[in-house]
Image (cartoon, rainbow, N blue to C red; front, side):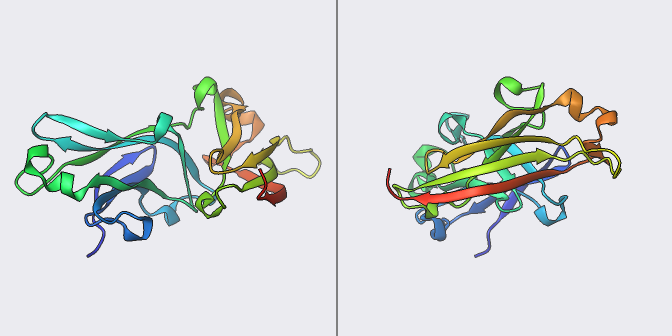
Length: 227
């Protein structure tokens, strides 16, 4: 059976959709459940190096109580969508036994209502909200790390000055960090990477043709199993 998609909507030039596995995503231990994910449609059509930071909730409507059952990451964790990870969600969103039980009110006339609520951060996150561009590096596929493993990483994040003149030294914005990545610490970066006023200042040449060039350089990486 194919994976249905639904609820396509446009938000800041990106198209989002819900991806549903009605019998569970068995590859992610979702058997016996509805698996529900939020994903970006046609990510291959987005500019090279794109990324969007999102806080989202997925929900299903309860017809009896006329309210939504809402599921989100603990502490409202922010997720980073990019070319390597254009889908996030829950393999065990809702038990099929719970869904099919008419006393629970999720099915009516053999149909149910799913939805998503998104909060994007193009203008900063946390204390930098509406003040700065926030930029983070996230450890991908952290589930492949041993439970007691850590990954020491030294990295540099850079926003490129796009003014091309060999006689003028470029004014890139860059920040460096040293961090231990692990299952409980998957994301590290800078909430105030560059102020929005500097970013939108045409004389600084960070934005060219409505495009921004962001680079991440891994300077050193070491794996440790002893914590």
